[in-house]
Amino acid sequence: MLEVEDLHVSYGRIRAVQGVSLSVPEAAVVALIGANGAGKSTLLRAISGIVRPRRGAVRFRGENLVGLPVHQIVRRRVIHVPEGRGMLARMTVLENLRIGGFARRDGPSTAAGLERVFALFPVLEHRAGQLAGTLSGGEQQMLAIGRAMMAGPRLLMLDEPSLGLAPLVVREIFRIIPRLTAEGTAVLLVEQNARMALQCAAHAYVLQTGQVVLSGRGADLLATPEIQRAYLGTGEAS
Amino acid sequence: MFAQQLVNGLMLGGAYALVAIGYTLIFGVLNLLHLAHGEVFMVGAYVGLVLALAGFPPWVTLAGAMLAAAALGVLIERVAFRPVRNRGSHVTPLITTIAVGLVLQHVVVKIFGAEPVAFPAPFASASLELGPVTLSTLQLLILGTSVVLMGLLEVFLRSTPTGMAIRATAENQTVAGLMGINVSFAIVITFAIASALAGAAGVLLAWNFTGLSPFFGVKVGLKGLAIMLLGGLGNVTGAMLGGLIIGVVEVMSVAYLASSYRDAFAFAVMILILLVRPTGLFGARLQTG
Ligand SMILES: Nc1ncnc2c1ncn2[C@@H]1O[C@H](COP(=O)(O)OP(=O)(O)OP(=O)(O)O)[C@@H](O)[C@H]1O
Ligand SMILES: [Mg+2]
Image (cartoon, rainbow over all chains, first blue to last red; front, top):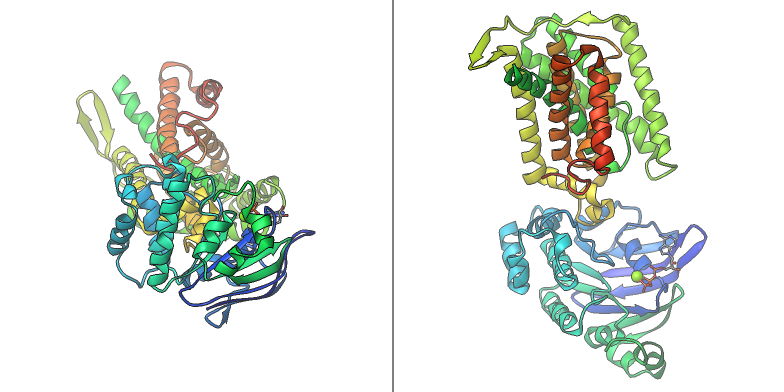
């Protein structure tokens, strides 16, 4: 469904992504792991149109997305939950959710979308009238994902959803992923929490200084000594 | 006497608020100052003058001025903001908009002359006695129009999809884009609305002062800018209340002090408030409310 071909992205003279190719099949979970500064967020930004790649193609259902403005890519229901959650902090939880649904004028009603999000994250319903900026980190991540669901994503790109969250909250957020794929949404998951990501991913790519250095089935990578040493051994939450 | 002056001040302040809201909206979405906004206000008033002299009823005068100002605002966004947005420094649009403002003044001088001209009264005004306050029907129209426009703006920003898109754009353009909002379009709509409000204020103040000149926008524009600071950068409700406060202060200073110091006094009060509260009366955080 998503094919990234030989993508190069630079910020001025900094080459953040250097010739990455990857693919995300329909309704699959694909993980992208790598150290700080490997270029994971940049890759997602290039797919969603926030930064323009220097070279390469991003094909979504056969169409090249490179060069389309961000909102046009969103209309194709490629939804990006950015690093840091992208809260509209001065707007309420409910307003954030409604705005999430703007991408989708044709689909089911906003009310139905809200009902679905509130069923998955009941805390958001209790906080509906509260400003998003006043939510806890975990609640903000739930709102970010709930808001993305309002757009009815075909491809959902999550940039480090576990960042800064307690393990219990991380588990609550990760339990959403199989539900999404069951409804046909593909998920491209960027994580520093490599164990968690590899456990739920059918396929995974390891990014290092802007290049794919390893890829394979999530379970296989989990068992690879190099991966265990570099990403699962020390320091990483598990 | 006091109640009477209060009503007069609110009338003036309502029109100031409309100008200040425009600065606030544009600053809110772009974080940039639009220094030709006073001239948009002035051009709106002249378009109103043409329509009034042609014998159109007051509502056509007002609507025509708003439409023309909106179109001018959208044009200014195209020529003075968009080419330098996300490039160059924050100073660039200051220069480009000052240039646009000067051009607009010169064009109006060329067409209408540099001298002040009289603005015809929209109708033969009657007075209404409300206890200690005497209100003319014209004053009622001026005050009512600004109150209605501000109310409509609040509702628009709070509860329509386009209004929410503008607020989202003001808060974070990248995130707004990721929500499927066409950010460039939201910016254009913001300019149209901000400018339409300035055009309305142009006609309202021309009715109030029964005249106008090509340099009408300089002082009012400066006042609007200062009111934006007073209300809190990017805070629409703050601009509304700040405008009303300055209108009342100005009228009171004329009534109880000396009329030649009206502007000095209004600005002195603003400087005083900003010394005590540098982020403005209502803080710079919120878009509305
Ligand atoms: N806006 C920017 N301007 C200049 N350089 C940038 C910018 N954003 C990222 N970079 C650089 O590009 C490289 C890749 O950054 P990126 O944010 O994509 O990494 P990442 O894999 O997401 O890292 P992390 O795990 O820390 O989020 C880094 O060297 C970073 O310093
Ligand atoms: Mg990152």
